[in-house]
Length: 119
Picture 1 (cartoon, rainbow, N blue to C red):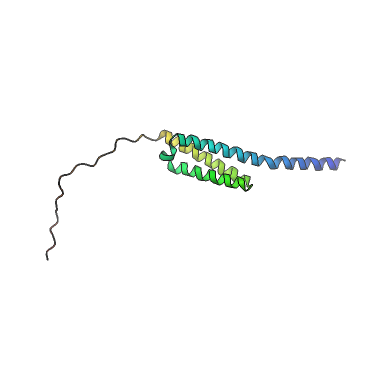
Picture 2 (picture 1 turned 120 degrees about the horizontal axis):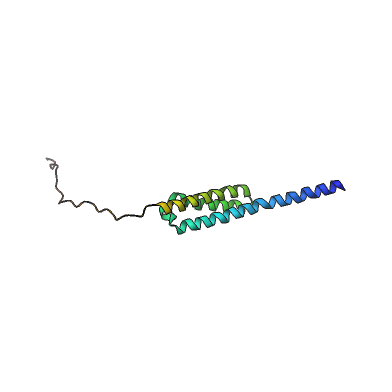
């Protein structure tokens, strides 16, 4: 009787632990999606291109890993995507606004300083 109980406890523990990583991966991906949307709204796509693009690509890879049932890598990629999205949002918020475009100095008519070749 004791052996049966121990067996079912182990089976139940295995079933419960296998579903947790899928839930963690899904939660991390949703969190990264939210951070990326906030970064986009802050203008990070234009002001922090490197971090924003990295966040998009890591998020895409996290979704792919989750679809294949590889939850450990999905969690890692989702975590990286979220960190990059938050960094992109911070960079966009602290970026200096563009100033007026500098116009080139007007110059006089072009003059030739070199002598034409002799034939």
